[in-house]
Image (cartoon, rainbow, N blue to C red):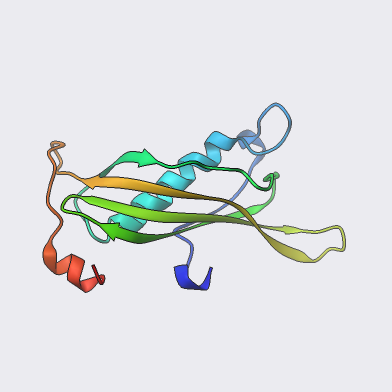
Amino acid sequence: MKDYGEPRVKIEAMPKDTNSAGNIFGGWLMSHIDIAGVVASRELAPERVVTISMKEIIFKEPVYVGDIVSFYAKVIAVGKTSITTQIEVTTTRLNESGVNECLHVTSAVATYVSVTKSGEKKPIDPELKKLHGF
């Protein structure tokens, strides 16, 4: 995750976030994926963004109560009003030997649209695009 910098969201999975099988609910993970993408996209659209799409999410590893879950996100494309982000999710937990291990949980691509407070599309400032290499 070195290309992503610090996590946009980092949180401990709690008992209230479990599904009927006792694992962390997929919807809980999806909501934090969305938040991480928003945080990344706000660097280019500081007023407000709304989610317009999220591509397939495949859960590769379960998340358990007590896991530290990190949500990394970076902007991968910018349009006139849209921002596309890549989100990677990892979990850190103690393995059976008592050693912390980091596991890749899932990935997602989410797209947001820059909007005003009243919800109208707002073009992304060309200077911010340039500043971020787009």
